[in-house]
Amino acid sequence: MVRRLFGNDAVRFGFAVLGLLLCIALLAPWLQTVDPARMDPNVINAAPGTTGTFAASSEATVPHTFWFGADSYGRDIYSRVLYGTRVSLVVGIFTAGVALLLGSLLGMLAGYVRAMDAVLMRVMDGLMAIPAILLALALVAALGPSVGTVVLAIAVPEVPRVTRLVRSIVLTLREEPFVEAARALATTTPRIMLRHILPNALAPLVVQGTFICAAAVLTEAVLSFLGLGLPADIPTWGNVMAEGRVQFTQHPGSVFFPSLFLIPAVLAINMLGDGLRDVLDPKFAKRSAG
Image (cartoon, rainbow, N blue to C red; front, top):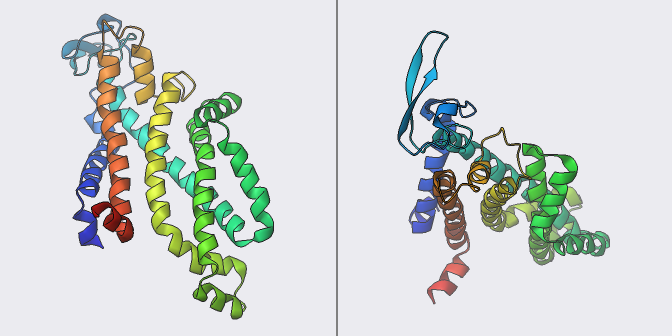
């Protein structure tokens, strides 16, 4: 499995890019050149490579190079983009985790407990009828901007998709001989779900989780860009782009440099999901090859 996993080009590319982004996120305090919230009115909208000075103490100043330039408040874009990597990865990973957890629970209940199937699936159909971005905007506006709120707002629209996926798997598995044998041995329903059904659904759930993670990273950037995501004092890729969109034609760096991180991140996660699907589902790989 490991040889097949890392023998896939998409998986290798996804792991390499995500590993690099993870290192950037973890080492941001050491890679930064200055506090991302610190302002310097002397370098407002400075071009990339501009050198300025910050007061290190009351008596001394130190030179500082703005590698990606400065925004309209005189903050270092380079340092803000580095810390934005942390926020994007946290939002993506936790959103995928919440959506998979809730969707798996509801999907197993709907697929295994016949009495709950109709009610749960009609609720899921109602949620799927609402555009995901509108539902996320409504939740953020109602609960207030914070990391937890953004994670919840992006995860809720993904829950129905995970629920339907798990339900379809459970409907197939509950008629299998090993499940019937477990019922014949008076095994409790929760034990059957956790011991016999859930392990057989892990492969598609892992693949679905990567796609949810990629969508969450992109949606968080969209919400922040619209001013309805995280607070402006928290550096995110979307916030940096939102602050620079007004002066994009004169100073494109505020939008261009965060995009250089956002695009590879979303692409790498999606390619990782494609590669995992090929490795974990040999039938799909054979169909694609044919």
